[in-house]
Image (cartoon, rainbow, N blue to C red):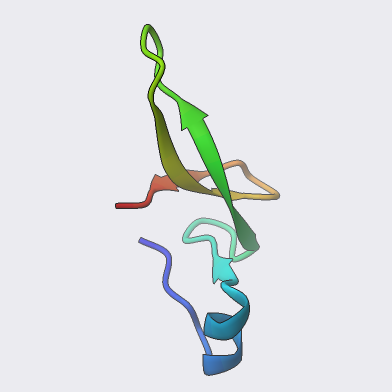
Length: 53
């Protein structure tokens, strides 16, 4: 799971990707065959994503 690296990144909610080290952004992902959504963090570069609880 991605973790903030410094205190300044925690304030701006910037997370780094586990695979490439780039910035991750928060997004909503639609679940197939349902009207529900889940929150994810997705990398801007390699599109790797993780689920936020």
